[in-house]
Amino acid sequence: MRKTFKAAIYETHGNPAEVLDIVEYPWPEAGPGEVVVKMSAAPINPADLNSIEGKYPIKASLPATPGMEGAGVVMEVGPDVRGLSVGTQVILPHSFGTWREVAVIAADKLVVAPSEIEPIQAAMLKVNPITAWRMLHDFVSLRPGDWLIQNAANSGAGQCVIQIARELGYRTVNVVRRVELVEELRSLGGDVVLVDGENLRDEVAAATQRAPICLALNAVGGENALRVAKCLASDGTMVTYGAMSLEPLCVPNGMFIFKNLRFTGFWVNKWYDGASPSQRAETFVPIFDMAKRGLLKTRVERAYPLTEAKAAIVHASQNERGGKIVFTM
Image (cartoon, rainbow, N blue to C red):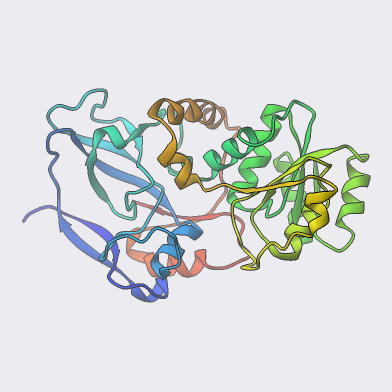
């Protein structure tokens, strides 16, 4: 009997739990410049669900396999491949559907991940940690002791911001919606954790002793983002990288005129597309170092086999979770 592997596919856009199927394909062979990767793990990210729904800016040709992150181990090396060998742990590119047991892919598209990093953690280093690192470096020149503020601090990216900022000596104000998240984020390294409300600006000023805050990270939008923006010092910058509330950020004219605030955006896909191979490699160096030392870790609530994809998607769609939902192959 010919060997096969399983992969998730969707042939039409819609409710992810309804339109996703698990199919079997013949086991692939590596061609020139290619390797066969046995997948270890792949997370379920909001962008993955948006892609299946047809709401993500980039739409894959149908039928498509979802999954923007994942890690695995090289099982077979094709002709003309340099720098990769059987047994090497690798991270797949963001343009490749990772919800599958096996992948055949061009070797030069892969990122080698240190074997010391747990496979589930390696599978989640390409989106949220890179997003956090670039937002902390590309918009404002922060120095140790400087403050920044973020909403959605309990999200995957928000937790990465806390952990990376702590390692770099930056201080974080973390805004959440639920009081039960406060101690959790403090234990993660958040300097100040506050529940969002009408008095947020006064609470931030009191908690930071009115220290100037020059960087705000926004993944929510709407009134929440506006309250966070009001905490910025003059000439500060707000970087928007998500819109969890599905509400636009409406900025009063005075924030531009009298405080000279800057509002900009960040999308990790666009960064990958514009970054050179050396720039990508340089960004992964500190990320890998922190992951190896246990200083950068994404919490996982539950792992599912790929055959239970529908249950995993339902679980991942719940708002109040304690960590990521991942597939383990």
